Image 1: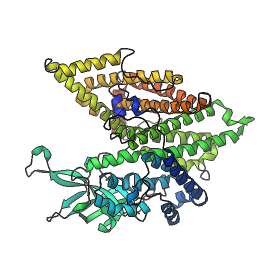
Image 2 (image 1 turned 60 degrees about the horizontal axis):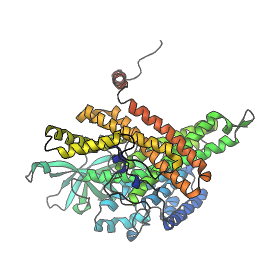
Image 3 (image 1 turned 120 degrees about the horizontal axis):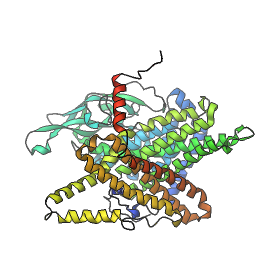
Length: 585
């Protein structure tokens, strides 16, 4: 494994300062031999069982996964992959778990969502924040699949805005339990789960007001079991992932023991964000499974379908599609397993990397599957072929566990928070130059090292054959930092409202992280297999970096010259008219 930076360092956040923490991403991480063997056994067992017993078309049309399939997969240990061995699970690393999730989703997305709802987010809070007593009480049954878990955050008026939840938990007079009332919507595993991670508002001391009697409604996380009075609504009928359970949940005077608080009272928002930061990587890995399945379908059809006397794989427009969907999938895969390795090494802050992986992999999977449908043409539109179900199943990935729009805002704003604080300190130092000589001189050194060619952070561990790609990364990291600096000086506190700007910053960072991970992985191929045997991978890397760098350039250049205000006006007018207003009649 690679040498580590301090555990509290964030690779992606450093890019906003113009810094490349090279030792965090070179060499490209590899699973240990022992864990690789474990994963191979799990994957092979699942594949052999799935080939004979899992009918994904039947799951989709009947809108359920059979109890027999669930029971067998439970016996395989697939419901306790991330649960530590001492509580009855397999104790897989984040990397190993993601690889198995990739395989599950390549067979059936509904299965992947069911597993993800159970492990990635449903029970993850107990592992991350649970007391020893809570872990001993709940994890063993969850590890065997005897009980299922679900994550309950979203409400009719609170989705990405978690602070808007209305579900409340009132502490009893004897302070031994809470009375929980409210509802949740679109809860994965809602109809089959026994254990729920539920987020509700509780009255807690207002820390800003000192130690007085003033209280404030804050979010608290609870472990709630069905026998406490949880009811669910009917199963939702969805566009895709139809075999997974999605329902509303109702809490009517549910009596929840006080010891079932997960984490600290009033700190539920942190619990939710930590769970989702971790869980998004299972989702991202699942997207890779769907993309790989689509590429196999597309290439098989393209090489066997004959038109005008030759296979359609020989036509330029089809070749363009196949090349692009392959390089996008390679980049997404490189990002995901770089990020899971950061988690496995104990890096504490991987929030931006996780969000980036979810955004890129979900959108690239959608493009990949859409292009596979285009290559399949007429047959891909017919229900008897698997393409159309792949397309329907993939659409949800761009929406759930944080919409990609919200995650772009998060990526940009969280990334700019550090430079923003730094510039604030510099501004204060400029008002008091004698007292602020430290921040001012530090700022000058950083700016000179970033702006003068030959100084500053560089990538030294990439293969020399990738020097062009490495140079592009170095240049655009510098340009990103400059753009962030100018943006913060221009907009200051109003940056929170500038979503067009946030999107451009986020898109540039997403592509930069993808380029870096792809170059690191390609370097590992060259070092392991030699230049000649790595030609295919090198071409994937070079082509992806070429396209990504052009996107970065376009995004950063349009920070100043754009038509944002005109687009806002157009949107406002269309909304005011409640639709498209024109007709030729």
